[in-house]
Image 1 (cartoon, rainbow, N blue to C red):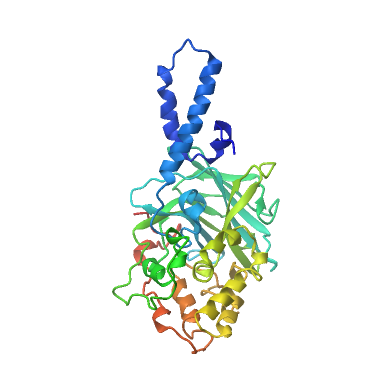
Image 2 (tube, one colour):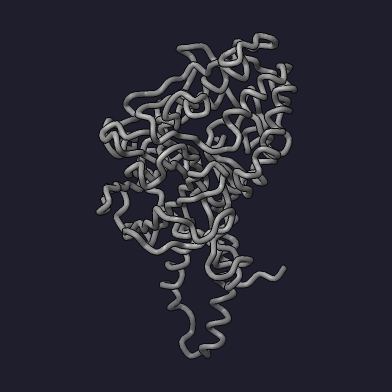
Length: 422
């Protein structure tokens, strides 16, 4: 494959361009009397060479953590800004008529790190309000500018121009500044910026239990379940406690999303040469926490990311069945998980005043997911214990809880609800 300056520019991250700008400023050494054509050829060749070299240097050493916080090797090492971590859907604690959507992405930001947002990524909340797992309402976000001059563009909520894995930009609705709350005339509030990562999990111990889920151990992870318990209470550690995350937080009137049951998921997309007319191609999709991380082989994550929720019944269901069989538990466990977690959307009943995790699927309440919901324990207690199903055969008691709970310091009682960054 031939590589030149023009073909590689779309893959060069912001930090590489900063270094290249400095290089250009120091081009005074180039002899002035040489022809402009020769100088142009020299510069293009130099840019291509330096860009390739810097990309290799920047991405040669992967980070040490993973999970859906680092869903694939590509997202973990090449495009962290498109790496989705958590979706939350919950009733507003300050206005009963409102609902809150939270999208967390670009994980493992250390205290004091000012990581820029990537203008090349399109972030979307997708809402199905007809029950067919196809989006009827979308909210789109993207970032413009560089450095301290970055701003946020909001599009929607409205019907999508295109559905599925290809997206077209809606007309602009509002703009605002990063790390500041801004409002719209129709009662909507937005915050796009850095927050304390609200997810709590002893991820370090989880990787000892199922090493395959750690991207840094690919392609030859150790066999799973050589360790059959989480660390006990008092010894368990919240692996994500030292980290911040990028967040998009929206509070809006429920009526803008629908009047009854909805399904919500989120996606990140990027432009690609194979799509014309400025359309974006989906690169990751996420909704139900722990679904990919627990049940799906790491090598299958990318294929799932490139699909829509309409494919989940045939795709992800098979992984759930295989996983439950592999750990020696009855098929009824898989059936229970599939009934509430497939398709991979977070369900909420907007007609209900309050909710609990999986409450909509069980016909009880609003459902959704709140930042303090202990989704790991809920899932683990079903898969490895007898919660919900009452099935005791093949239980693994040491895996029913990671013994890590929410830290109240990571949350706020009012918008934007996620705690201030470290």
